[in-house]
Image 1 (tube, rainbow, N blue to C red):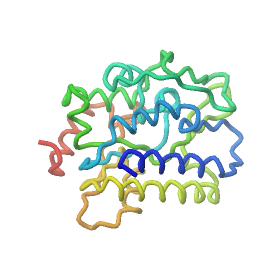
Image 2: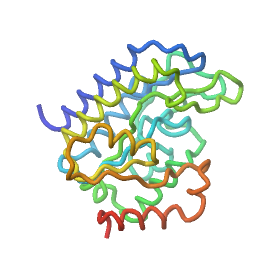
Image 3: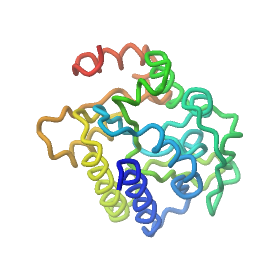
Length: 241
């Protein structure tokens, strides 16, 4: 089995494993590995390369990013215009009326993804150059939306203890296997939560494990020169020139 087949096969197993977990959460749970599988696997096949030295890890899908496009931090314009991915996306089994999945027809921009891919495209105008040495994943593939009218995004760290443990067990196993397959020299959390997950599964003391500020507009630290702070941190780690 070649490298890409191993990545895709392990991701399909993750999809089955998270679908098998029973949640008491009374909101809506979206699994883009199911309904956006075509897009996600196109992303994995095109942009996860053997020998990538730096693995970036986010937390879980955002309602206007990966929940719509199937791509980590999948802001619609970045996915279409920078990553050049544009394939059909289906629908989750239960869909919040305020958060329909429109796929590549979505018109809302996802702030975190706009910042992340905006910086990447500024430094690497050709995505192939970035992905020679980098890959981007999310720790958890599930998106959680509150049942209320506003469909507030609910992060998995707020789940009941037993359910969170069951989900983290599955996601930890996937993350460890992906790291073993790719064997990067640096693991970079996009935010402190993701860093903690990388630290928990990393078994190579020679690897760099750290984090950059999460680019969410809801994070006050990210709203002042996120690009500059991120580049400075990556230079400090000796990973970007």
